[in-house]
Image 1: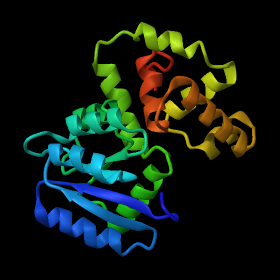
Image 2: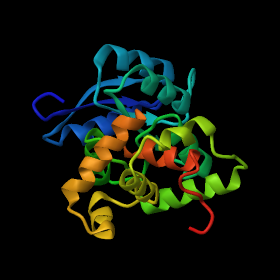
Image 3: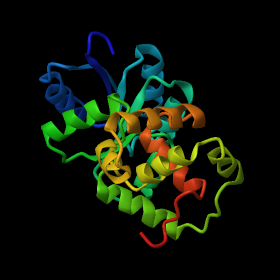
Amino acid sequence: MTSGTIRVLIADDQQMVRQGFTVLLNTQPDIEVVGQAVDGLDAVAKVAELGPDVVLMDIRMPELGGIEATRRVTASTQRTRVLVLTTFDLDEYVYEALRAGASGFLLKDASADQLAEAVRVVAAGDALLAPGITRRLIAEFSRLDGAPRAPLKERVADLTERETEVLALIARGLSNAEIARHLVVAEQTVKTHVSRILVKLGLRDRTQAAVFAYESGLVRPTGY
């Protein structure tokens, strides 16, 4: 981010939505909308051209949907994070968006304050996983008949015992402060563990760490 300003790209096929979000976000002193994209293909191209910090990505768009566009964006750059926007609060969208590499999930009817705060959270590398979304993610893993992926399971072995414990708590939706209280350690200590976990596992942020924890079998959905 330049001089503390969060640079945002808005990708939505509806002009009124793009303009509305642009107006709302540009009123924030620390956020600047640097571009708009009319569909998924345009979003991927604009990310390459503009290098935004955050993309507000609509799920349903022509040419290329938001989930596939998210997948391409996150595969092409570590800098840009994706905040998925949708009108539909549906489980499969949450699951697929997070698996595609999205750092957060927000409904289009969120308030201006919620939208701006979501952009800040995602830009900072934190997870935008509200408890309700975490519960739906768990439910989706429960519904899918998927065994832990062996390669992912092996990568968990690279973590220390405490790092493994922290990763499991991230997957349950706990914040750094909540993890610190749970483990009776300083919050800064938790932040250090989280940073090491992301580096060791080659993950973008806490959201991807949560997905990894479930897909590796470290955290099992049953019993939660």
